Length: 114
Length: 111
Image (tube, rainbow over the protein chains, first blue to last red):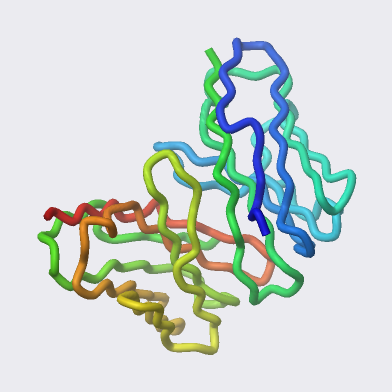
């Protein structure tokens, strides 16, 4: 398996623009997680899905952030409009069914908002 | 709310030394604890996963222990090598499917 796939790996955009980050989880995994990592706050959970259904989005910082999972093999995290303080590395992770299993992380998308 | 703390924040050791990284958490009601490695500019690589019913897990030169009642875990690295240089993060999973991460320990192993 190729592992969790994220695209793009790097994104540079200007303030006010829409940004869409993409994730393909490991095949067969039914839980998907979006995280944000910054120097100041470390790794924070933004939202997670079970069987394509959003379960907990309490970590989503503002209404400018939205996430979707239209099917078991694809998820998006959208920021509209983007702001400089959104600059961070965004990670997607997936996990097989059951609370005792490991999470596997993608390589991340480094977002810079100018 | 679960709080995860890692000490020290940074550690520098000579090659060959054995070392211990510490992780503590405030809520002992966890499903499991996972240790990750993160290289600069890269994603997280899972090293060891300890279930709440387990006391330790071993993989090669790595040994992770868990004392759930006291809210502590340690990652022991034997005979450290320059290739072990990275940031090590611990994360605990509670019953709400939420994983809480420490900010990590940045390890440098000098040749």
